[in-house]
Amino acid sequence: MKQEDLAVDYPIWDLSLGGGVLIALVAITHVWVSHFAVGGGIALALIETLAVRRGDPSLRNLARRGSLMLILISTVFGAISGVGIWVTIGLVQPAATSALIRTFVWGWAAEWGFFILEVVTALLYYATWEKVSPRTHLVLIWLYAFAAYMSLVIIQGILAFMLTPGAWIQTRSFWDGFFNPTYLPGLVLRTGICLLLAGAYLVFAAFREPQVQARAALVRLLAALQVGGALLSYGAYRWWEGSLPGDIRALFVGAKPVIAGLGATRDLLLGSLALFTLLALFAWLAPRLQRWPLAVLGLAAAFAFFGGYERLREGCRKPFVIRDVMFSNGLMASEVERLNREGALSRAAWAAHGGDGSPVAVGRAMFRAQCQACHTRDGYLSIRRLIAQADGDVLSGLLSTMQGDGEPYTKPEFRQEGRVPASRLVYPFMPPLVGTEKEVEGLKAYLLSLKGAPHAQ
Image (cartoon, rainbow, N blue to C red; front, side):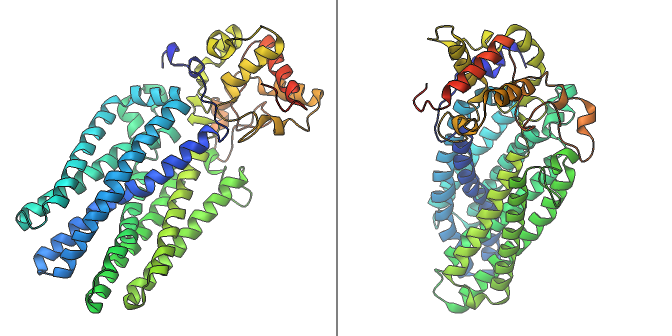
């Protein structure tokens, strides 16, 4: 990336909730419906194809009811929440968003093209029931399924790149970044998730079938889709996990994972998938006994599994937003040495605007430029609470160990199997503090000013 793309050039969006939490809320809600948009398209295409071939009115009615769900849940809410993701990441992580757009601009263009085809065909499919021939109607839903899945194919490459950029770090090649080490296992995993979500959503449409025998047949068909999706998801998840570098796996795998919270997330997602699979098997073996409470529990388990995976995938990038390239505060690993010489505030004039040049003012600017991407002053990950028990000597030691050259994150020895970046950082999942000695001392003065000063700004 070019020099003008540094995150310190961008003002921080100050949220007491925390920018990362806001992104998580919007993004996880979005993927719960966007992956149904993909899996639902595939499921409806298969269901209506069977309905036409068998002349089965119950299958056709299921596809018709499912088309309304597809429009309301995915095309309406999914599209709105998708826009919400762009708004939030653009405000919270502008440098990372810029990097992804610049690196994959033609990929984004292709994805937006497929998305337009997806929306158009979904609307036409819903609006043309009994108005066009069955063959034409089938063409519409298969076109939709193709467009939706191709959107997933492209988005997966960009999401996986953020965790495992692979050879792109050396080559800067679009294809090396796109077809990165976790691309294929992640795509297969998401395909399984799409299928299990499709079955979990559409079973509610199947419940509206008035004939008991036909309703049981529909529930069994959708339960088979859920079981198949769950088994595919489990196998692909293990594949994805095994494709990660050893230092990343060590963060959440094993008896004592390096980040205990991520280890607990892994346990949650695997347990949720096991529960979902058991519920789906029950529905397949005894479809007449399937009821709304069990279906709701199954959908909740699917949400917990998928949400847990997304949290795990995002969390194990620490301390990066693009691993080995850009830290979570937007600082480029390649710029650490230069900013240590020239000063972080030489590129973050916005942070120091209105300051009087005092040590506290300099420190406040440093906090805004480098720390506030993750920490708030008094809200989420409150810096005031974190330093409440630290005396001056402890704080001085903390800042001196945080200030580094970034090398521990890039040296080959820290990429070996089973190791994590173990550097001069007291907390090894924080980006290094960069800046001149004056700026670091100013940050210390600002943090000390917060102790016992609840209204410090």
